[in-house]
Image (tube, rainbow, N blue to C red; front, side):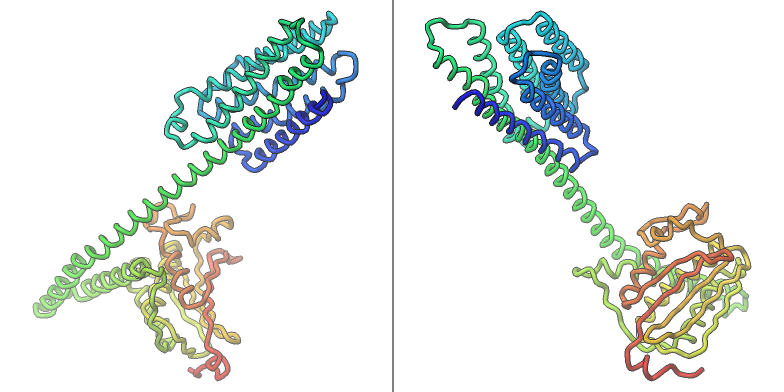
Length: 465
């Protein structure tokens, strides 16, 4: 192998690795060390290109720029390693680059021989490679735990080869053995300058990629473990809550029945208040059962019990319950429909969904606010719309309000858990339907539920009311 072939092989290898490092930057642009390693790829590629283009020209400024860029790329690799292991960026990096550029410029200005410039380059690279080796050999928690062991050992082996090659090159350049033939000296130079650095480069730079991928793998495993732990905690909480909440609610309900009986026998007039409390407890039971129903099934799907529901009567009873529950706000509730549509669904689940919509319309609207419920049928679908005249929902939050525990920015100090619309969407989805929220032009929010009707019902029409 001659000098030109070895030089081309090393240069092409450097350029390919530089392109790979740049690709890593675009794959993960948020990590600081990937930015630094990508910058090292750019500097190395630029430096090698300039050196190759000026290899057969008299030494000049461009050769100095190319060698400085190549050296800077190696320094930036060291800086990236420090960032990878969480160490502060050393200001010595800037000093080393500036010092190398000044010394190389002085050598070119003084028309120094090639051996002098080569000694400066090799000595400088040995220093940077030793700094990289020291960073890798330091007691880093990740490296000590073995999570980055293979990639770290691969990088160390590559650095040792690079250091050995440049040290041997320095020895050959400085000693200039006279008893060695020119042909043998040329072969030694090829080995020390090209082949061993080529092998070291093929070990070290891919090892940086392995370090990066091992870090990503470790972070993903930690994230998976955290999610698994959170899921287990949630499951334990659901099991505990589903086991414990029924007893106190049952006690409250029983005592309310006793108080109501005593109230009736004594002739007092607390029946309305007691009845309201009973309905509140029953509703709490229904909502809790609905919220836990999905978590109690191993397949993640809740069972629904379908039955024919005459929608106008059903809606009228739900509206009456919501009006009684929010009697202190005196809401103006109205129901409009053209046909008495029959829908097959789970009465309890649909009641929970509609009560949550009415709760939001009343709670976040003004006192004595108007809430309109409209029922209609179009082709093979049932449409149920709840309109209010509240403050509305910010446009950027319309797609977020269905999230579990999400509360809008306009909820203020109004009590709430942020689970209502999440339950509504889930219940409607269990009935193969959908819900759409939009702000009304005149103010307030419009919630439209779409539920599919069986083909035979859609074709036969609805019962005239």
